[in-house]
Length: 310
Image (cartoon, rainbow, N blue to C red; front, top):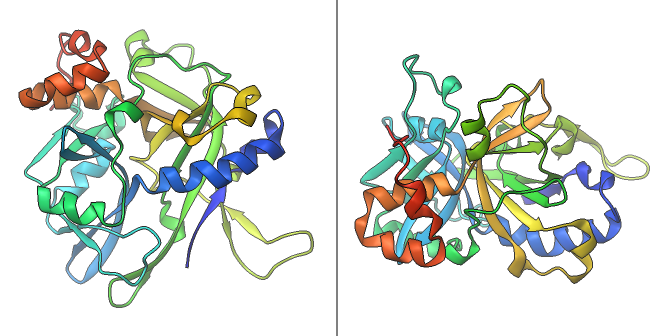
């Protein structure tokens, strides 16, 4: 059984009925086809590590995710991606020879890493296998420069641990959680440099729900789900404002940031803007610099700033 759950946040937005219709029909599948639930197999067990976004630059495939997800992914064990909507098919084995992660501070803890983003370069065979069941995000579908406003509608889709069930024989039942929300202001005392490279999204646990139990009058019984496992998911601009939703198409969707932290006290999801992983690729892959700059010329300037890679 596979499926998605649309966030309850939508009922707080302008014209919620139109928004839900457009987002549920058009955005959800489009984004899900570019988002990979990443798992690790080892010692007879399979564990969900987090969520990842597929990105392609001039034919080279990458997984973009949170650095704390990549840290675990690079330890002993085999990396797997579960084909979307194909529970009984064999998982795709992920092979890579290069992982670029943001640097940890002296504490050596990702809790002190305000960037917390990583890029996993994929072997061609892995890319070929993934293309059979997924789509790669193209450079033209990435937003690297423009700042978001509170008018923008933003969606993020990932795979919470609570919504993945391990079934004997390497089969899985899982659900993707799709939340629609808006950007919010950063914490008042946050460093301005961190603010510049981060995106903050309004979030509460009630925005992610999982169907449980028998149907009840007026609908189904849902329970709130914590977003552990959503780390590494993309934050996507769906529309510039709710007023434009009636004229909206999936061509407007842009990958804007990579989710990495749930700020419980502040009611926020924290994400790193996509310019950072693009800078990592730009620095590590000289042959890809030209195609990156054709779509995102600002990366050349950002690459001159202090290096934040490990």
